[in-house]
Image 1 (cartoon, rainbow, N blue to C red):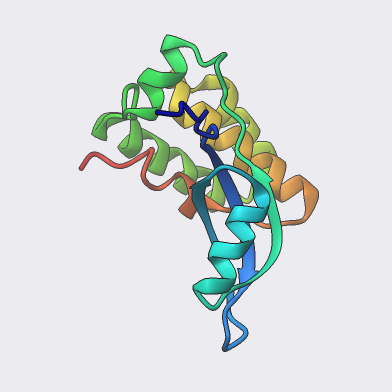
Image 2 (tube, rainbow, N blue to C red; image 1 turned 180 degrees about the horizontal axis):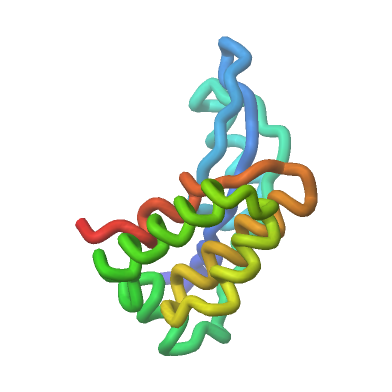
Length: 140
């Protein structure tokens, strides 16, 4: 009876193209990047990039709580935000200045983080990306 060491399995992220040329992204568990490439080719996907997924061991309890939906804005927070946005747009205040003021005065951590991201997107010229934060700021 021989004892063989089983290769360690890791999580790999990949980007590739399907046979029709469509972009394909995902993750696979395998022993190496070569094994991932072989499996992708077998599935009809041409690999473009394969990287090993990194494990973030420095996650805090607060980060985990937020990821699980803790700290979402209440309906009251969202109503107040909408009223303030209406006032900002009605008075003609520049949008970035108004959003910055809202960000500084909001007490909800999740809403504040969403506003910081939206302000950064607008300042960099990418446009507002509210859809990225829609799941964080809804009460479902």
